[in-house]
Image 1 (tube, rainbow, N blue to C red):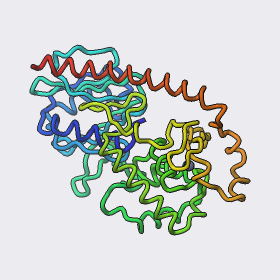
Image 2 (image 1 turned 120 degrees about the horizontal axis):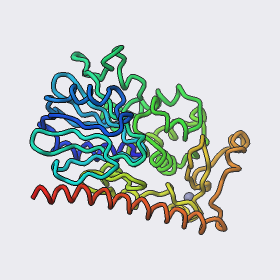
Image 3 (image 1 turned 30 degrees about the vertical axis):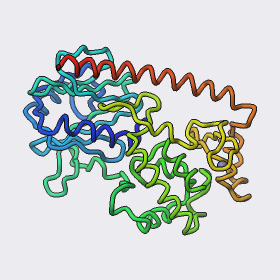
Image 4 (image 1 turned 120 degrees about the vertical axis):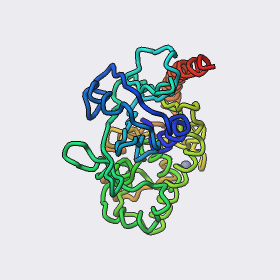
Length: 337
Ligand SMILES: [Zn+2]
């Protein structure tokens, strides 16, 4: 699932294409894609509005529209966005189309149909997105943005000291920190040399600072590299390259880039978790309390070849799907001349 760097990249690619564009209509072929409206009501509600900005909050795109409205797009597993001329061929995975006055379309393509688009109002005073009925703020339960200037190590310490749980699930908790998912949680913990099963309560002040710095560094680098094109993630201007720079994620059985020992895989809260058990140590007490999870560990020398070939097959299949998606987008661009 796209995390902060991938969604940020999509927002940046879409911005020059969409800001100033006027929406004249919408077509929806899978009603559940729309989180807040029925297809006809949605088409009526967006028609005539101009795109004012394209941004991101947590793992969602936020497209602000004139008249105090905004669209949110949660890509989930396989969502992709392309801006193409309306004459571009449509494939069967297009779930929602916004028709633009200049003859182009914003198409939401989503093979597995988990992606969701919402239409909300913007509070005129705070600018916060609010549901049209009930008035609850859409992002009220979401934690701070880790790359925001005002997010400091002091603030990170304050938040971490209120928590007691293990670090891996904590980093995935969007109410703790916005935008971090499985890839960048594993990468941040490896960089900070902290075991995913460490608990927040055991962190010393230097550990807190290392983790804060690792999260910011890995996310910053990933944004610069346009995200990690693993699975179906691709952006309007093409794939990212961060997948080539990942140190632990999906590198089970391969040598740690710091110590040379094999990267291991654990299952923590049903999520696969990658680590170097040499660089990321646990105290004997934590090893004892995490014994059940530690028994799920794989990645010893003998297990590497099978898991690597499975990972390779998955990667090749995803690359093929991305190429297909890009071909649809590029075909559209060429048709535009
Ligand atoms: Zn290591």
